[in-house]
Length: 354
Image 1 (cartoon, rainbow, N blue to C red):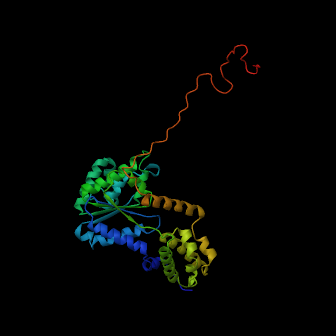
Image 2 (spheres, rainbow, N blue to C red):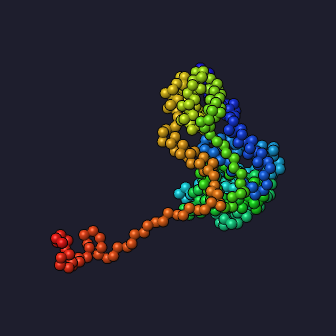
Image 3 (cartoon, rainbow, N blue to C red):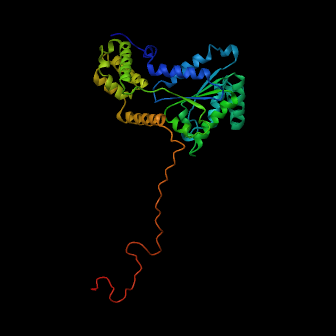
C-alpha cells in the first residue's frame, strides 16, 4: 500500500464551490468597504470559515512585512471565553487585541521579565484606558481590517440579556473610532445576537458560507468533492467506494466539508494503522455519533431559519398579545372541603323534596 502519512494534501486539492464563492464575495466586499463597515461571515461549524480568514488575511496584507514596515494592515484575533466560569470577559479580550496589535507597553511579547511587567500594567489599568490605548495602537499600526473569529462567543458575556448586544455595539464603535473594517466570523448563533444589536442594523454585510444541501447541483458537487478526496487517499480506498456511499457521507456530515474531511481522516488513520482498506464498517465507525449529529443538525436548521427568514413588514399591524387569565385570589378559609358552612332555610335544604 502507498504510504500516505499526511492529510494536508487534501486541503490543497479540494477547493469546492461553496468555499470559492464565499471567498470571492468576501474579498470583493472587503476591498470596497469603508472604515466602520461590518462584514459578517457566517456558516455552520467545520465548514471552512477559519480557512477563509487565513486566505483573506494573506490577500489583504498585500505582502506587508511587519519587521520592515512596523505596520499591520490586517489584525486577526479569536474571541475566547477567558472570564470566570467560562464567561466572555471584555477586558481579557481587549488584552488579546493589544497582543495582536503588538502594543509596545501593554503586550506580553519579549522577555519573561518584560511580560510580567506588562501583565501587571494591564491588571492595574482600567478597561476604558486600555480601550483608548488600543484605538491609538490600531491607528499607529496602519490597521485597516480587524477579523474577530469565533465571534459567537460574545453570547457568554454576562447573564444580563443585553450584554452580548452591547459587546457587538462596542466592537462596531471600536471599528468606527479606529478607522477599521470589522469582520465578524462565526457560527450561526451569532445571527441572533446581530439581529438584536441596534448599532449593527443597516451597517453590515453578511457572507454565507453554506453547507451542501439536497438540491441536484449540491449533490453532484458533493460527490465530486468526495471523488477528489478518494483519489488523494490512494490505495487505502477502492475506486469509487466513497462515491458509491456519497448519500451516506452527506447525511452523516450534514453536507459540511470540514466534517467530511474529519470523518475520512479518521478512517484513513485507522486504515493506515492496521494496513487495511477502508470498508463500510470502518466508514460508519468514523462518522459522528447520533447525538452529535442531532445537535449539529439543530444548529444548522435554526441558523438557516434565522438567515433566510423575512423580517416582519413594519406597516403590518402587530398582533395583539395573548391575554393571560389571572385567577382571583382565594379568600381566607376557601379551598377543597373548607367552605364556610351556610344555614339553609327550611324546605330549601339539599335533598329535601319540593
